[in-house]
Image 1 (cartoon, helix red, strand yellow):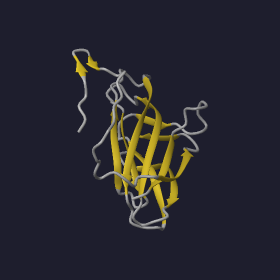
Image 2 (image 1 turned 60 degrees about the vertical axis):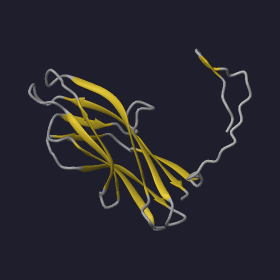
Image 3 (image 1 turned 135 degrees about the vertical axis):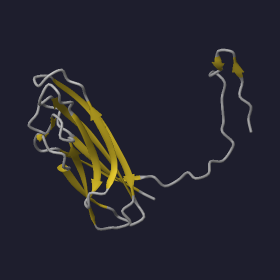
Image 4 (image 1 turned 45 degrees about the vertical axis):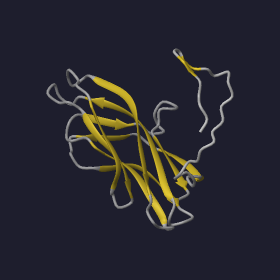
Length: 171
């Protein structure tokens, strides 16, 4: 193994470095396909605590040992429905049977029913469905019965629409 020269202020980067060891567990992981779906329209959740589909896309893997990498970029607005309401939302990435693959709770404290907050977030999920059948991947939301949540779609200001990117990753 080669020695690396260090100084009190860090590495001396004008030297030449060479890696002579081995890496185990590396390999695979090639991106075989990639696609993006944009949420077609704004979706509003208010007053109910049930999970609802926001938008979805499908992907068909070329091998049953490959993986799906799903990245959902969510743009939203929280709006208080009453002075005592704290808007919240749980967004999920699920498979076609609504099995949760990733989730995140967003919560905001608003002073009154006319206050609102706009923001964004990202969810990432990685799994193997062990199938070459078409797979549905969904973004779902549940506002917990508090406030009103709008997940922006393509009708929103340009560039603000929520989207999901699906990738097939080789085993």
